[in-house]
Every structure is written in C-alpha cells, then in structure tokens.
Length: 244
Image (cartoon, rainbow, N blue to C red; front, top):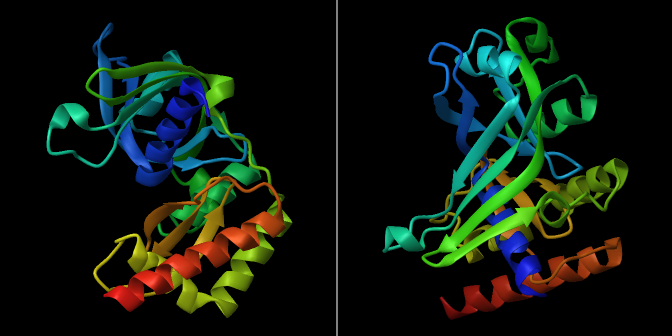
C-alpha cells in the first residue's frame, strides 16, 4: 500500500467508524456564510454518503439554492487534539429516491427511517456525491484524496450480503459477541447485538441502534476470504478472552 492508498484507507476508516459529522451548506439567510450542523449518514454501494433531512430544515433550503456541500467527520479524540484524525468530504448533495439508498440508511438507523412513507411526511434522502476529500491524520499528516481513490464500491451483491448477515446472526452470535468485546466496543454489554452490514474492509455490528465498525486485518474480495477473515477474528477474540 503506497502513501496515497494508505491515506485513503485511513480516511475511509474514520468515515465508516463514526457515521455522523457536521454537514456544511451555503447559507440562504446569510449569503456567503457556511451553515453547519450535525447529521447522521450511511455509506452506499458506490462509496457515497446518504443523509436523511427534513424538508423544512435550513440545510434543505440551502441545498435547493446551492448543492455544493461539505461533511466533516472527526475521529476518536487523541490526547493531543492536533493528532486527532479528521476528514472533510466535498461534493454535491442530490435528492435521492433510489431504493438502495433508503435501504442502506434504514439498516444503520432503523428508528429514524422506520417508515418509507416518511419521505412524504417531511423527510427526504440525499446522496452526497463525493468529488474530493481532505484527510488530516494528525499534525503534519495532511492529504488531498481524489474521489476514485477514496470511494470504495461494494464488491458483494445485495443477496450475498443478506445471506451472510443472516447466517452470522443466526449461527454465530457468540462469535460476534466475542469480537464486540475484543475490539473494546463495550464493557460486556451487548443487548440486541447483531451484524447489519459488511464490505471489503470491515463489518458493522449494532446494539440497540448504536453502530460499531470493525476493520478486517486485510481486505476481502470473495466469500471464501470473508469466511477466513471471520475465522481469524474469532481466533483472536478467543485468545484474548483466555488471557483475561
């Protein structure tokens, strides 16, 4: 992995881990000024961002006049704030009626998008089509990243994802709990834990609507290599458990 690939990988890891950030739009009521507020987001099969905002929100009004936006995501805080990783995604926000975008957002935020009819009740989905990325991994570690280097297209089909997720939740829940503990995602509390999604680089677990991202040790591109990744994660989790 060269420096460019490494920067893109680290930036994606922050974005996948957090799933919330500050969306900035061009203010309608205060022309020339950016307006920012917190939003939750999901990542679709093209590696773009999906958000869900109210029709009457300030952001919607701003986007209707100027669709150029940014989304800033801050990683886990380091002891020295200058060493905290942060990512700014620059792109255009487009209203989306694609079912795939609705489905992926609903996986991560089931309460917020419980009813598809909400689209007609005051909320709409938008896709942030990324054009460029700014990643700062820490003090003196700054990079501009091109869209094609950052956006990772989903390698697995919807059917295979659903099948694997169903299998893991029904037959390997104990393994998921071990992995949950291994990566210090909790202090032994995993109410309603389940796997909800995965891509080439990692998987997402969910407990009572809180999402947790775990990176694979190395990318997977086939179901066979995915199985190997799960086996290795389970092995590490059991080894860690035996040492505690």
